[in-house]
Length: 366
Image (tube, rainbow, N blue to C red; front, top):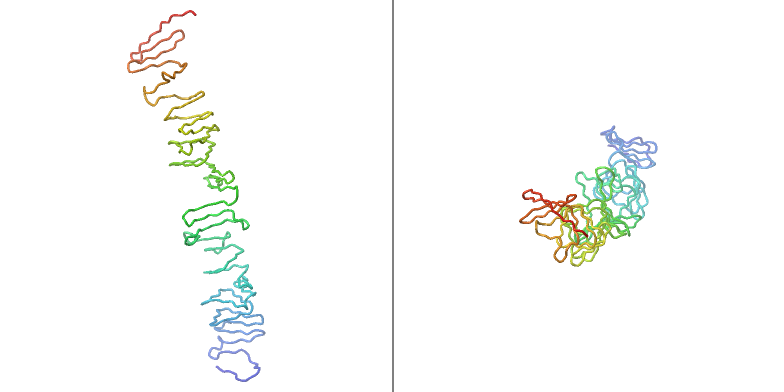
């Protein structure tokens, strides 16, 4: 390879490597200098800047006083460090302008795609953020290859929070306490916390209200349970309360009012239930103690003793004044008779032998 060692301006054409005159050379054109290898211009210096079609390698520090534009990727073997000279300038990657601000922050309106991103300070994004997806459909879109897991770790001995704000004002949160309790809370005064589900058809509806205004729990759908259902405080049922087992009250219910069908029943200290309203029982009722009724007792079905020939209707000291009945059936360990009212007389039937007898009555004059 030959060199011109003369000093001063030289008027020459392109410079070629004599061993490879067609593939490796320096081309001088109007307002440009091109560095060519393999017959292709790799670096082109013009009056507007520096451009190239290959990879630019720098073994040491590289200072760029103006815009750096690339249609490909920028790969750093160790660290890319921006000095004060880059502050306020523009870094153009893939046609997206990223500006280094005076505070040393990086901001831009384009898309920044990272294989790995580590930030020791705050990160602000004006658009959607995608993790595992290049096309996020919401503010934060997490898409795992298989099972997707998002972890909120409060650290050792600390609570973990997921907060919900409106215009920087906290409205609700989910907290995993360091002690193991999980809390879901609505922080807005007198508002509800609702539990909704969607049936097979239609939209989602509310099944459970935690009403902060009335400080009560409203169950909007039928409740079923295979074990014990506990309730503390006043319970109001607008529909039927059905139980295949027993309904029992603890001592805390004594002296309080049980409201059934808008009729108040008081649970006394002796465990009795008393009230001035109507107590309606549709099905069978088993009472373990006495039933005291101050008014009329209307029964749509039969009144049966718990066992045969074991209980009395009235007593020697407390007798019924009048007994209104149709036919009268009598039976003990010796006889079995039925008294029947005919139109003009009374008859009696021996149920053991089937014989029927007529009462002979004598009229008494007043």
